[in-house]
Image (tube, rainbow, N blue to C red):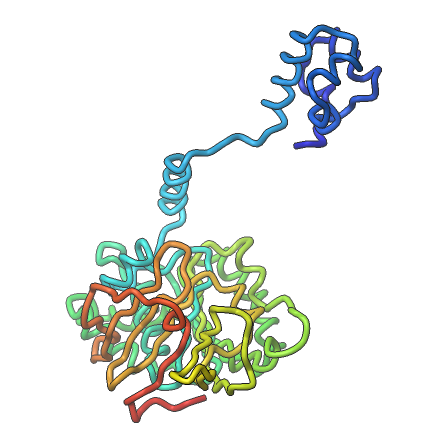
Amino acid sequence: MANKLISEMGLPKSIGHIFAARNIITAKDALSLTEFELMELLDVSLTQVTLAVALISEIASPPYQTVQSLLEQRMQNEYLTGHLPTHLKGLDAALSGGIPFGALTELVGPAGIGKTQFCLKISVLATLPSCYGGLDGHVIYIDVESKFSSRRLIEIGLNSFPEIFHLEGMAKEMAGRITVLRPGSLSEFTESLQKIKVSLLQNQVKLLVVDSMAALVSGEYEQGPPRQHPLGWHISFIKIPVVMTNQVRSRSATEISNYSFQGERRDDCGNFDSHLVAALGIHWAHAVTIRLVLESRSGKRFIKVAKSPMSPPLSFPFKITSSGILLLNDDGIEMRGPQINAIDHQGHSDIILS
């Protein structure tokens, strides 16, 4: 706006010609001088200068916004785009309605903690009729590690929504709305993105799941300069929820990060503690809008909102049942300091470290 031409601002011709004659062409040229300097340079009255500067400032300055107007704008955007409710009451409340459209949501945790269970449940919800709180759409499920189980998917649906899935042919119909792709490499995955793009435009696709991204691009983000990740394009045109799982890796005391969200911790002696961190590295972390960490502590599982633009860091205890993930408490525990991004793995023998 500073480079906007004064000749395009609608000043009175008498004063506008004088600005041009004195080679004061842009708003920046005019506003870089005091009113008295302009009065001397233009050889006009202080009143004329004051009126001209006021008009130039009004046009060149970006419009101000109050907190109230920003809140109303956000609510309108959320109404137009929406969320995919997870039917986990506490988590949906923390995320202002569920998994947001047009954003990248990441699930991080050790193997066996429940990431795929979460993905299967939200896949069911995306295909569910809208009258039951679903999106009544189709799902594209990128199953990198061949963990997708159609039997488990139907089990989750039957136990979560028996009134729907027990109807004749309904389970088959809803399962038919989920397209499963199994790319064998990153290049195959990249090629499949073009097919996904066409499918998104032609079909009522309401959810994209990648389980897991780490298995596809292991090593791509751990070292070297930042590279554009294969789903970087989704922000510009995909207006549906995008959910991707990520693995964890062990972190030694020699791998100390300067970034707070990597989960840096010290023990009682002030030494750095070894612990798990999300795979794929720092550049990938910046691309994520929401990071949900699944972990275990003292024999209990927790799902933690570690990164979100609309929620403080909260942790919810959960268990895995025949109907999928179930929160044990809808009142999240607020996390502080290193707790936010540290990933614990204590007390569950069925959790396998990647």
